[in-house]
Image (cartoon, rainbow, N blue to C red; front, side, top):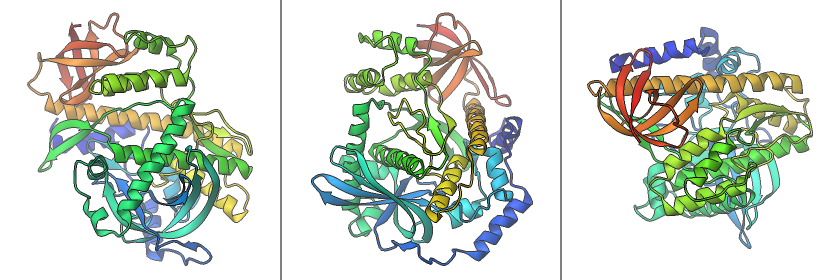
Length: 485
């Protein structure tokens, strides 16, 4: 299948999974009407435009959902403010845009491009926190203590301006001391100090979660590389120090938002991850490295094992992390009753967790934002517990479907790169072993395929030598056979 057909293939694959790749005309019209109206008057919304807000994201990201700014408070404590794009103000509940967002529940990020959850008129324009643009936001204002605990949380609406859009790779290199300051830092007074303060706060937050058993993992995803519009490679998308910084800040924000809704006695949508069902395989995986894990799931013990392996074998840590993540399984959404805590997230070691920081990209976050804004206004909740149960089921289902689409399109893209390599052997890692099939991942290109012969005895985390025996770009199939241990 030629690369130029990849986007059409992605759209067809989405439809086969119950996802709609295109917006209906009423949704596009509603978005244009919102842009024509522009930002509503600020009223009594806080004016925080002069603060040195900044974002860190990928270079090609246009749907910017959050900014942050911080200030030291003495004694190792700091005040951390995270501004989240106000999307709810522009997307009417049960309107045409909301109907599409509910149907898909997420933006779908494929090797053929992005299929956004909301029209780009909003998601990459009116509600995207672009550099130099005034935007409405919901601010999560937190005090982070020296020990990494989060206290004194306040939420409120504010108008802000992004003073610099920074890029993950260049910011990570600068923080590591291997490169000069990125242009955004160099030209923005006080931003260097801001980013370094954020790095310190993130370290405090991470240390506190680690003490509770948060898992130290580092996974690598495939990044499509194009040359003049033609796909030429799928390379590892390495995560650096700036990625960790943003992840730690967002985890704290999501947890603080969940606690806020609990305190306000509002029902909420939570993201949870139960203790892994395949703990026995994690025990066996650790035993291969001479480590004995407890018989029952223990996040702290698993994290100690992972941290030790990161130090001992940094080059192989990404593969180990991938195996562990696969064995942990997928998270899901659940509804939490008003004023009640829900089950927590095993991997993040947090008890209350609500996706809230990406309302342009995830329906769950838009739903959470509507509940937050209703609480701030003193209104009745937009959603009751029964409605949130339906939304939770829908979000879990469609997130899984979106992930399957992304994998299938990635395989179709990889199949075009593997043309002519039938019979070639590759080093591989087993990433899935279940009745539905055994799957392995190779590294050049970085892609998963099915092990169709020689899968006996193979389990997640095993390293094998495999041989490419078949590809079908149209179906997104890449088949291997076992060629050795």
